[in-house]
Image (tube, rainbow, N blue to C red; front, top):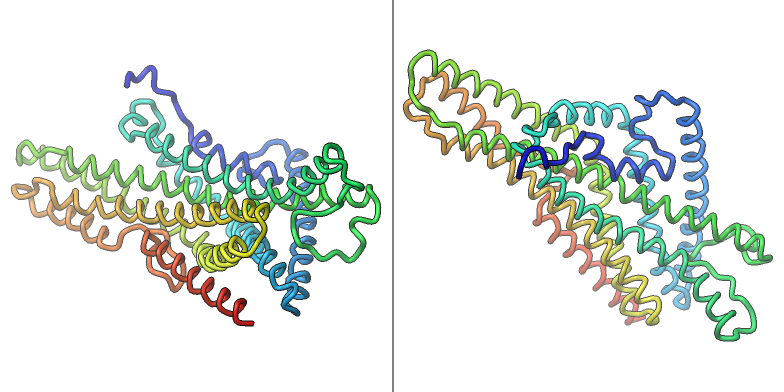
Length: 406
C-alpha cells in the first residue's frame, strides 16, 4: 500500500472503542491528562450515581435468587436470575480491579504508548492497520452481542406490553420488568413509579454491559499491541542478514541485537503488568462464565419460546467472551514464542561469541513466553476455553439431573 494513502493512527485512535464505552458510564481512562476539571467532576458524579443505582438492583437480584431457591415452583426463576446475577458480579469485580489498579493501568498505557509506532513508515513496517482492522472487527462483534443481550432483556417487556395494549387490544398495559429483581416497594403501583424504575433498571443494565465489556476490550487492545510488537521482532530477526564478520559490521550487528533485547524485555514487562491488573478478575471471569453458560443452557432447555431467544443471545455472548480472551491469550503465547524461534533460525554460525551470547539471551527469555494468566490456571489459551466448556457442561448435567429427579 502507498505510504501516503495509509491512514495515520495515534495511540488514542487505537484505544478508541474501550475509551468511548467507558466514558458513556462516566469512567475517564485519561482523567489524569484532562485539563477540564469541571467536566471530570461531572463524569465522576455520573459514574458514582450509576454504580449506586446498579448495585441497588444487584442486591435485589441476590434477594430474589435467595427467595426463589426456597421451593420447586420458583426454581426456574432462580436459575433465570442466576446468569444475570453472575454477570452483574463480574461487572462489579472488573470495575473494582480497574479502580484498585488505576495507577498501574495508567503506567501500562504510558508504556504501550512509548512503544507505539509514530510515523506512517513505522506503522507500515509494524503492519499496524492489519492488527487494528482485526481488533476492531472482534471488538464490534463482542460489543454488539453484549449490548444486544442487555437491550433485549431491558426493552422486551415494554415493547411486548406496548404491542399487546395498542395493537392486540389487551385489557390493560402490563407493567413488568426484564430482570427478576426483589423490590422493597411496589414498583408497579403507579405509572410514574413503574417508568422511573424501568428507566433506572435500563441504565443499570447498560452500565453492567459496558463495565463487563470494556474491561475485556482493554485486554484485547493491550494483547493486540503486544502481539504486533512480538511479530515485528520476529520479522526483524528473520530479515536481518549477516553479510560479513569484520569488526565494524560485527559491532553494528551487536548494537542491533542489544536494542532488540531491550525491546523484548520491555514487552515482556508490559505483559506481566497486564496480568498484575487483570489476572484475578480473569479467574473470576472464567468461573462466573462457567456458571453463566450452565444456567443459561438450563434456561434454554426449560423456558418458553420467547425466553429462549433472550437466553440464546446471552449464551452466545458468554461463549464469545470466553473464546475471545482465550484466542488472544493463545495469540500472545504464539507470538512470544515466535521471537525465540526466529532468533534460533538466524544465520548466527559465523558470528562472534558476544553476538551468540546476546542471541542466546533472547532465546532463553522466550522459553517463558508472554501470556495472559489467571491464578491457579495454566496460561490462558484454547485449552482454557475447552476447560471452561467442560466445567459448564458438568454443572449443567448436575443441575439438569437434580431438577428432573426432584
